[in-house]
Image 1 (cartoon, rainbow, N blue to C red):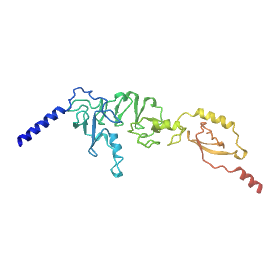
Image 2: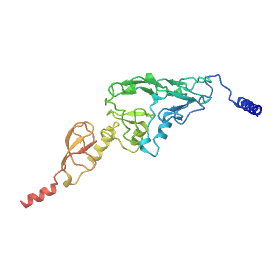
Image 3: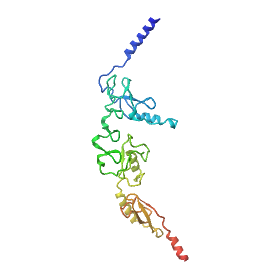
Image 4: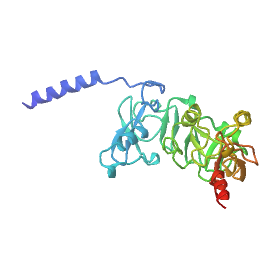
Length: 293
């Protein structure tokens, strides 16, 4: 029986060796053929928080945050990953750029700090030491603003309003956390930040005020000129000809303006992005009161 058993094991070993995948020698083997909807990479990560294997941290977070029990929902801290699984030979190993078994590069771009792999280097990834995470877009095209605590396009250097930790908040439109979002962000002139897609969506729906501070998000001078013309050609009835106190959302100054259904112009900067801060006394009631006296 032992002879038969040994023979059986030999046959199994022979079958395993004949069906075992050929170990590639080229480090670029399988490039762009593996990964998930978030990244093209040739490895999977073992999440230390739940000891499960996922294609990337975003896949983990989507799964972990959809658990029925809210107490069990959690995010993966990227720096805590210590084990990865090669997608080519399925060998689990410590984090490294090249597989210790088959030798392939598990990511053309590799960051040992973030434990990050990506074969698509057209994103121009780079690690920002001040942010503590990897960014995309090219190191030479961005600078880190120490006041805001974020990386911005070099075109915004000395040309933006600094708000401390401006990106360490949720997008005011979709509520996704901005700091480590994979979506492109847009910094408005007021200094607040939202996703570029969310910003474009607001503009396309004729919403031009920052949802946080109500300042104008784009140059509205042409629109104000059109309003000037419309107001000048639209006379209000006599009972609506009174002054109201207004506060400008753009310059934060108060002034007075004649009431008009189309809008109230700031007496300082000329913006129509204003709001009434007083309730006028009804002139009709004034007339009636004087008549009774």
